[in-house]
Length: 53
Image (cartoon, rainbow, N blue to C red; front, side, top):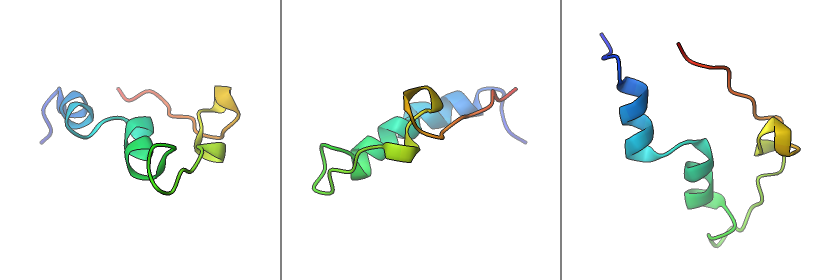
């Protein structure tokens, strides 16, 4: 079974989606890819994450 803080520990260790994206393919990498459709919905993209309960 998963502990109550599994999401917190996972995000703390590897980062959230935006941090992972920027670290691997974002503007500060050789690929220099903008988020585009991978941006959050309120920033012109289609990324929408429902809350985890």
